[in-house]
Length: 73
Image (cartoon, rainbow, N blue to C red; front, side, top):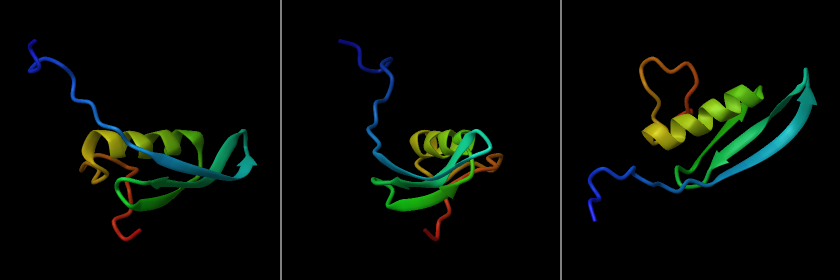
């Protein structure tokens, strides 16, 4: 079995709290359990981008990322 070409699998757990539903979108907070961080979001797109940032880069974000996890939370 060749494991070098297989994609890296990581498990991440997110707790999403929807506080409001306005402008056809969700607003609330998301907690990244493994990273120990919580961040507010203002839209479904922002929620997805936060989760994507956590999965791909360990939550640190990149220099070009507009949305990332706040290191203080």
